[in-house]
Length: 226
Image (cartoon, rainbow, N blue to C red; front, side, top):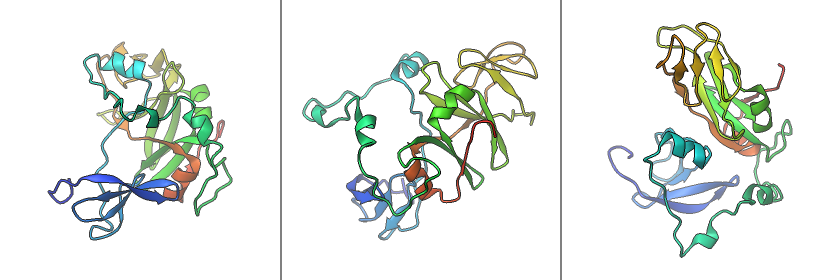
């Protein structure tokens, strides 16, 4: 919905190896990663992001037992990404105007933006550090990986009463140092004095480094041990 009007989008092209959408109503071009119109009558307008998770299906199904699943269309199933898609994509040359050699162009990162500040967390560093405590844009956060070592979520460590908590442990048992309560991967305290309390989720974007860097030019990078 843009200015009270529902727009219909379709794939229109590629910009910096990030796809462009075109809406049928105004003909404006929209950048996938930022949701911003970069050409046409609505240039400069931004779509409102919808919170989303990129997690393993088994984990999602456990959390949402009544959830519905989009079934692939058998007429075009051969066009869907194969299991080795990531491996094949690493061999494809990167076509972008921005090159930053601090990380490999196709390194997968988890990007966080808060209060105008951005930070990239290399996926390979997240599981060994989970729960990873940090501050981005003045917001104390925690990034956690699930038992599958691939599913990632981030939360604010500031509770409703303003208290900032420290967390430690592993994916299956994460505890806070203030009350000793146990927190699960959904950000809910499931055992202990604070059982039932919930952490506020922080939006993340799993992306290739070159793409994240292109649209977040001032991004910092997390380094283990620093």
